[in-house]
Length: 49
Image (cartoon, rainbow, N blue to C red):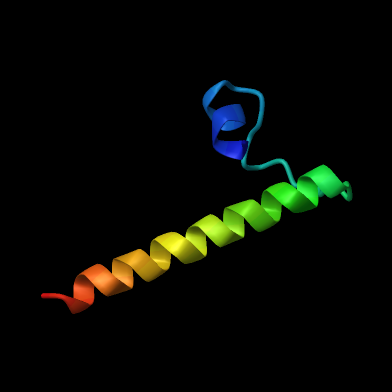
């Protein structure tokens, strides 16, 4: 994934090339879904105080 590539020095955040491939779109969707899930969990945890 993107974080692994950054950690291993093969990707830099300043790179602005946007791929138009199915694999890239799948990775973007997976990342967005993960962020939504984590955000929902955080909201649920903060509501239980």
